[in-house]
Image (cartoon, rainbow, N blue to C red; front, side, top):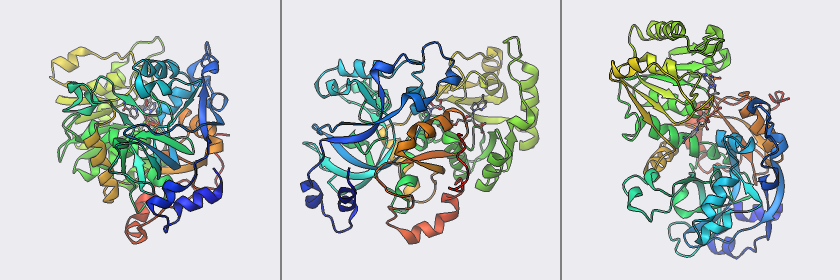
Length: 454
Ligand code: NAP
């Protein structure tokens, strides 16, 4: 996309008709995985699979929006962990998802391509709307959540996450956000928080909505004021939002992180109870591959020291295999372990006696339904929850950005500039922003500090 086009759509004078009449290019630049390379890492250990080798920046044909769809000029996007999974073809290549989706027919057939445009977040400007779209118009400044559902089956009508055709856009569908243009369903769109820059607005859609459902919603842990909430990875993607929800909702977060720097960020957010798991060197698994209950107890004692002797009401789980046994152990009698992921392995082991004898519950949670995503975005718009953007990469370095998250060399969220020429643009409510500047910048890594990747 040339700069003149971007300046034209960003211009405050440009009305919907002006933008709708701008000719669109036939091709756009996108971060893609290639179907012909989907087995390139076969036999390579997961930790050694390098996203800089599998992610390519290339030109792909611009899709036309079908009924209920919208083309968005993507000003900025973000790296989610699902981009890591996609780029290392783990647990299976995402082309399998695209083929499956395409087999459902109709417009879905377009998603099976020799390339997969990945990315499940965006902040941008509406370019074109497909037939039947009424809420959004060209020129609207938007963010997108990543819930793609068909809603043709009643199973999803009460909670859209229960739709049998539920997919994550840019992971299980094509034409995702790490590109100059994205194709979304109209009901994925939400208003862009006006006080944020493009890159700040782009990082929250997926993790903020997920943390909201997992912790706050009645579909998740239904957190209450005064709850003790143990949060793994409390200064990283999901956890940085969970920590904010706990604090904003009157709960007591017990933040677990892996460095003094991340511990400091949690304290700056307002958390008093912080555990640096690296400094404590917890070893929940022994060398022989069995769990080590003595370490669960050491961890539990530490938690009690920080809570004044109380156990935790809710464990916010996502590391999975490495931590799940400890998570089940430390939850209080009647407490809840709510899980949305298994970063370190999906075959969990825990001592079931601690679950049934102490009547604990394990709840599975996945992304968020339309309403939950909208509520989570509303809280950003109202300045109650803030983006945890730490560092922004240009689209050309999407592989490096993804590798940083894969290697856990990041904090908070990692942003990607797509059409936005520089960081710091896109703010429409500077006075409101000024009131929240400190919280918005809390995770920021000084931009000229060395790249953590190399
Ligand atoms: P992230 O930014 O990489 O944060 C994950 C954090 O977990 C890490 O930074 C690390 O924090 C902590 N962690 C990693 N390994 C650990 C271990 N062995 N023990 C204890 N803590 C460990 O990723 P994210 O965006 O938060 O996503 C986390 C997981 O959730 C991913 O698997 C992702 O795919 C999944 N997810 C699922 C959904 C869903 O809808 N189901 C949505 C979003 C994300 P410290 O090093 O500071 O401890």
